[in-house]
Image (cartoon, rainbow, N blue to C red):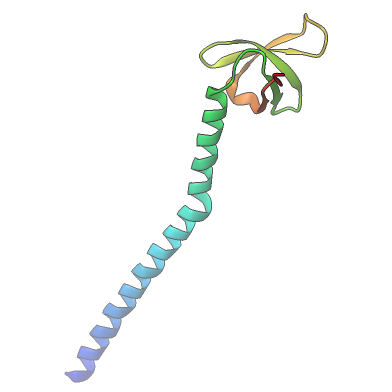
Amino acid sequence: MGLLLTADAAATGGGLIMVIYIVIIVAFMYFIMIRPQKKEQKRMAAMLAEMSVGDCVLTNSGFYGIVIDITEDTVIVEFGSNKNCRIPMQKSAIAQIEKPETD
């Protein structure tokens, strides 16, 4: 009877340790993968919300341009010195924004 009682206690303790390991792994995944991604999404959303006409932008494809019009989810960007090269694109295609220097 005493041997059977210790085996049950060991099985219960082993199950508890397994639950603790799973909780630790989930917490590790949250702090390593999920939390930094959410912080980056918030940073990008704030950057795009501050974008205004006249800002110099860098697109995800590596082109620099000047924002000439902003709508709900798209922007029209003018590339190069040619005033006829205006391309509409989604806001999500903007990688970086540089504000024009004011003197």
